[in-house]
Length: 280
Image (cartoon, rainbow, N blue to C red; front, top):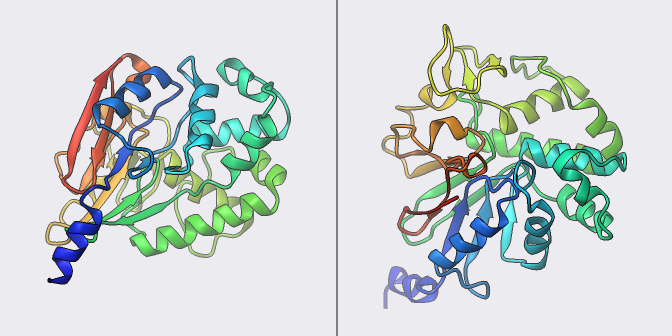
């Protein structure tokens, strides 16, 4: 029996699904799992971040993920905001319920250990998937993005209160390898969790949230559009609901289809690139 046949037999009953931004829409998330026939003892879920906020069931979503070891997630900007509120023990808006929950410290410890970058390889197809909340700028290779994400994760876990209190802001807007300390961490976080439009120098525009190009800037994935045509690389991201999942390039997969805005919650199965959606 060939190696490929052995691998097919080993993994034929296992699936990996990547799910777009849930934003506390827990009921829709459960319906999506049902539609995908998710088997928690065999299958794996990877979330593109922003588990919480906007929707009404953020606490239920967090608790469900913590109770299921086969569910992974990268951190999104709303998850980082929740971490900040938990670090100062200050509830606000729809996240107040989580901050005031009896297991808030358990949530804090679980969430702070989540990465900003996940790499997943399908052994059958040979496809490699890079999962971040907002994307990866063209100036970074996937391996460099993974290294920088790890650097930020280590800084976050090393001194959480300092990190979380200084990560806010839109500057610097352009990456420089010589950046250090707070500025370095902030721009890495902004690329990985807030990026939408960039210019040819990968300078961030963090104000525009629509889907139409703006003068001198275009979607981050447009600069990468030709680079991966002949490679089995796929970049999966959430964050940008206004795109409604449309990038016009199969290698760049937007999975935030606006469930929190009464749109759809969408997932993709990595083994065959099939998408699943449920309405709000």
